[in-house]
Length: 428
Image (cartoon, rainbow, N blue to C red):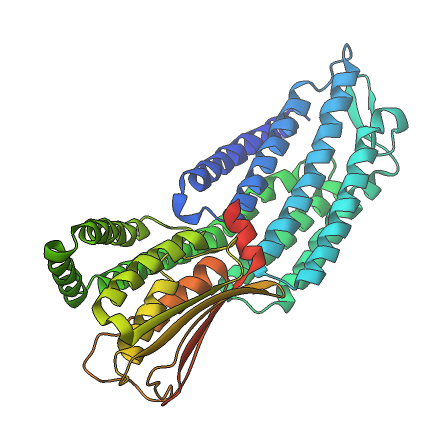
């Protein structure tokens, strides 16, 4: 029996070492600081606590002087197992993105069931329903098998969900392995009393998930963030074009001789405009709409100096308390001015509107310019601010959408929809 205890403790220690290394890697990995990564860290932390408790139960085994400690440690060990199952269910739902309604029902059942079993385990020293302590030694009770039902049911349901979900085969294999290996370990541990097979396979299963799911998704997230950075740079550079700088500075120079007060204000606005573009490179998260609107207003003031009566601007702002990626609306307005209004004889009007619509905030940028055929590529020799870049940032940062419609001779409308749930997450 002593050799089995040494065997169990040795595997617990090796498992803890591997779990701690993975946990530290998750904490240090800033490129995957998302919800699924945090849930995986919680999973690792619970497993570390579980194995540590198992070591403690072996070390205090046979101590007849403090039986209540033996009870307490084993009750905590049972509770940690239930917490681990609950944590894996939450992690799984985040990774595979199941239907929200099904996710809500599934997690509520799992969590309620887990809490019930934790409470049963916590009162075991009185009820002895799962185990008892005789002469300082842990002994299973006749109803011990009931304690393992929760794990088996949760893992079986998780395996079914994984197998039915379309996902990369590598991730599916890893997630299913976490359901199968612990289930096999629990079964063997139940049959062969004394050897902790489940505590051996749990670190192995988590290593498989770490390599095939966590690390893989971390690389994807890092690539997406790099693409977003490149998109911000591309948009910033497209907005600070030589022609805009030249026209703005020329307008300021003309004002210096005739209207020094407005010239000073224009220089201040111009500096603020450049700072806003440069600051956008540091914004990895959405910003408040008011900040975007201020940047937009500065831009349009300079365009008004340039085009005078040819450009009219209408603001129809019904809602302001929401967030969106930096440099989202301003590039669309610039497109409207450059490629819509400027090409129309006599100029035209750009209208910027915001409103609440159901579960979304809606931003609209429309013009009554020349319009274009959305089915044809616009190879007119001019630099167009990439709609695809803007759309990509909106989708990746807020889960929103961007739709552009246009009709030749009528004008163009760009509509952004930002889910309210994304704005709440951004506030956090």
